[in-house]
Image 1 (cartoon, rainbow, N blue to C red):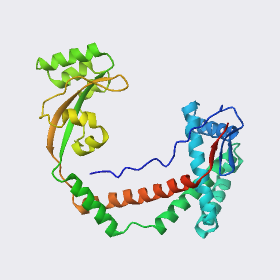
Image 2: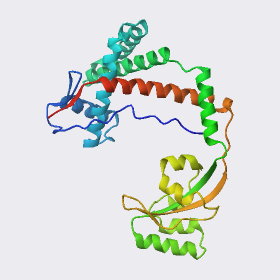
Image 3: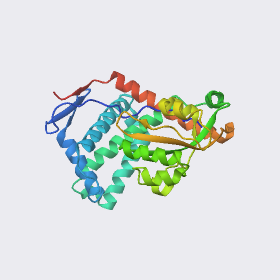
Image 4: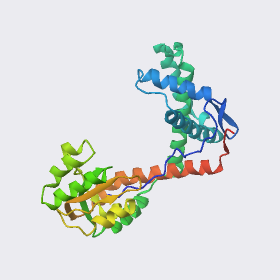
Length: 291
């Protein structure tokens, strides 16, 4: 079935300046300092027993997460969600459990507790959005009708691919295919993807051609008219990869019934509304990267 595409809840913010700077970014007047990110990195490394390595990408992701947390937390407090009985009870129960387990004596408890409070505020905000803008049965039926109409009469294919950065290698693979050698054998020999040796370069699932048309139009145009057992010429991607695509199977798409998908459709619709609400908060937020 078609999945309702959600934009990321972690909106990308171009952070400038050195990570060594005291203030990385200011969110509606609230500063995110490098020491905050340092503490989060240390906490993650401790919790993962050193499996998580410090890196600029990790710090960037943590900064983005904190930006989102601040924006949502500020809105939750504006709505006085932290004054609700449910929120207060959850905080009291969590603090009592931490005390009973001795977690409040750990050196990084302050950072962990702050992260917990932020997560709880985010959960309270999400619950508020769900309550104030619920998905109705009519909403689900409308979404299903749109979905079924979109996929009516469509086809789905099971693709195989041979990928390599060396054009000489991929041309050899094409030659082998023209000599009637099996695709799985050729993919196992010439594909740079290590999994191809096990799978023969063939995906385990099927992809609807309408989804492929929207997500990868170049590949769609190359395979849409191919019959089962046919393959494309060598194609080159913008990042320098060479590929051959193969149609291992092609069949009419089966549209599930409303009963089969109504729960997942409802979840997708609700998630989309939550995401839209958070995007609206970003639209009003004053996010200033450090200079």
